[in-house]
Amino acid sequence: MLNMLPHKKTAMTIQERSNTLRAGVLGANDGILTVVGVLFSVAVATTNEFTIFIAGLADLLACAFSMAAGEYASVSSQKDTEKAVVAQERALLQTDYQGQLAAVIAYYVHKGVSKATATEIATDLMVKKPLATVVQVKHDLTLNHYMNPWSAAFSSMFSAASGGIFPLAAMTLLPAGLKWPGTILAVALSVALTGFLSAKVGRGLVKNAIARSVIVGIITMVIHYAIGLAL
Image 1 (cartoon, rainbow, N blue to C red):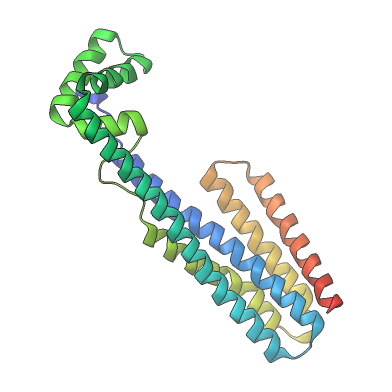
Image 2 (cartoon, rainbow, N blue to C red):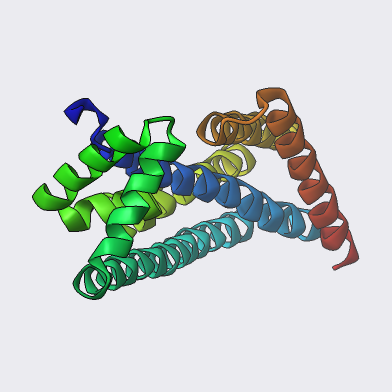
């Protein structure tokens, strides 16, 4: 019967890693698109290579720090919410222990365990680790395992900078005749990769995610090319 204990530590570790990977994928995608957007706008308006490079580099750094700040704020809010939930459940254990026990019993009954066995398991768990059991059963949280905002922030910052390097390098390092097709190809391949990774992280359809990412990348380049022509 003890095998029925709701151990979720490993699952939460996977969830934490997935959150960091998600932040990285989003950061890389934003880095690619924002940098290529600036590069296309500026490169159409001027042929000065130093100006193009500085504009792209400035946008790459701004995007990286912006993504990091956004992820830090978002994950910090999530962490605060999780801590508030734990505090609420701790208080309920003091004021409504029977209600909490009933919730754990109902959890196992819902899983297909008989009422008598569910009661036995729940009673044993609530004696040994009541708070950990309640937050896990009711909220799918592991006690003292919270999302790390710093991990998400650094992952997003690093990946945004890494993603932006591809179009920046293509536009500034390739020979004049290859700059535009090389940058377009670099962007298409990069966003296809981020689309693939996002599908894997979210367990979605890989083909759809790749196609969607490439289409968005092409639209981004077309729009900013048109903006550059209008300047």
